[in-house]
Length: 335
Image (cartoon, rainbow, N blue to C red; front, side, top):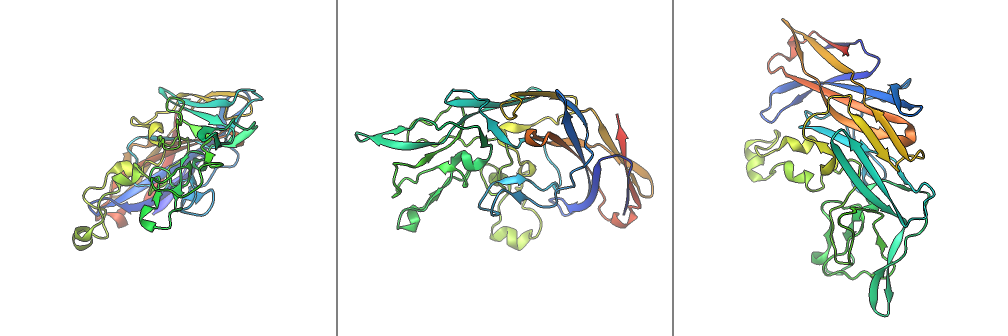
């Protein structure tokens, strides 16, 4: 299955099976751009390769995902991801708001310096935030975590929406409240009120495949599945599972390119503005007859610390019983 890449970007082809077991040819084009000057994007000299497996910040399964694998069958919209740090910009404010706006979609996270729960005259309260220059925008700094403090395992709990975070406390916890870390990343519209408050974790990165609500889309893997469908995906598998961005940062309509982008306080520059390139790759598949298919822009990764933006385009074609008829795939640059 020869592939001819006529673009300056990275391209790959893979064959995956859909829910019914049909062979699907998937073509991925990953475009890496450098952010130059005041916000002009140009193709980067070094193109980031296709991500073949999930890359974690720490131990796999026990830390958050930095880069999710690009090898997805499809996505039902565009994942929008911001990786990097929150910068205080020298502000004397106890917090800074980091916001990301791409086209009509916008998300804001309030970032505090380190805080803890204190007890004064028996009253639990939040300590004053410690000054900071920058704080990682990772889910380890958002609300979540697990609590295994009880000697009875049946009282162990974890935050299914973010098991690697901080601030979570089980209903029958035995851990000491005083000195317990409070999340750095919060939703400004739903700030933590008390030790028992369980707000939605917020962030800008990829969420884990086994986290909720993503895991709810994976389907049912029970005895009936083992008997009747294994190794195929279950009947109730939902394609939304393939989207890895925070639910607030999944554009249900595919981005098209040319969208304006604004990033506030996630760069040493303060405000970062640019427009996405309008380049759209095209793909031709040579079989008995030549065919082409639409490429969808389904993943956007913005890395201000690296002065880098990555745009992933994906297209697919059903080649059931025709796998060995595919002679050549051509990837072309379309304006």
